[in-house]
Image 1 (cartoon, rainbow, N blue to C red):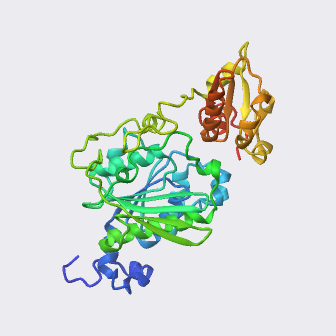
Image 2 (image 1 turned 45 degrees about the vertical axis):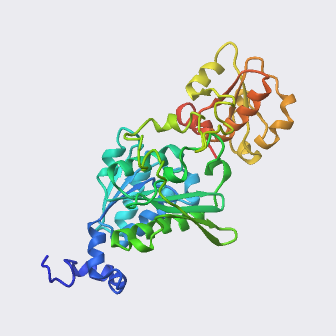
Image 3 (image 1 turned 180 degrees about the vertical axis):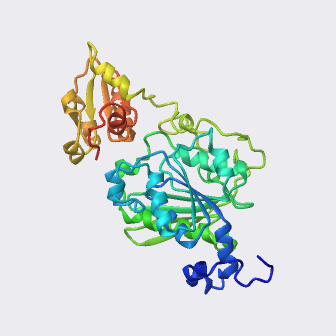
Length: 399
């Protein structure tokens, strides 16, 4: 490509495909070439990753990496629009890659069907210019933040729950990181996930599209207009936006003046210890002053249920979830989490009780209620019915 090439090496097909971009003075042929040369890593091919991936591919971002270990489930399709009904049961990265290649064959899609963790994050993140995080858990979010900081990569943050979404860009030069906003994760079970609290299907479409927009602007060099240094909060019910200004915290353990975090850690343990302390040092509810909840793996529960003194099972999901699937055949009884404090007298479990929900968050809160009551031994089923269905009973439907 010559220095005076007005099309910056774009082919006639690319000129037709990106004609509306080329007409924008903020993009033009030079900006389109920057998009084609960019490498973006999408963490998650779910609710946020779906619209982000589609719009980045449509925009002509040259290389899209997608990291996600999961398979498509029917319950995903209410919001994860990169997948179709025919993809149920397929790896999400494979389903997404097929859809993106159909949308834009010129985009190089690099599927990574693995869970992002401390053993691979630096290598994966370091292979791309920018990260768009569509994860749905704190362990991955802190991992993305730390890996991006340690490799010098910016990342676009998005989060959704019920009717509210959040957006920011961390890792800009001189700007804050995620730990400047949230030094450490909240106590386990304090904040429910989308599986427990729900999410309106169109909300991740809005937030994920905004993430794609921020990524495109960053690639184009439009740094003054990004959400770096700002936290954008969107309320879908009132259709309102509000904004919080963010600054780099000089005392931040990762990006501050004297950082103490210089390598990745065991993030699942970090986000599940319940030993979280805010900046002032005071312990919060769920910290070391509260009861620690023993976790039970699905295989361990099966062995206990088949043993001579099986524990009782308590399902704390909503009534409609119980109607779809349950462990009643294993002796489970149903008391929704909201009703549990007033119905403790109904429980009798001399050999202990194992509490479960869909994915383990609500049951963790329920187990703490039971532990405080001190009535009998209590365990929380790790990963809930999802974990049970994955490892013990694959034919069990999970709503």
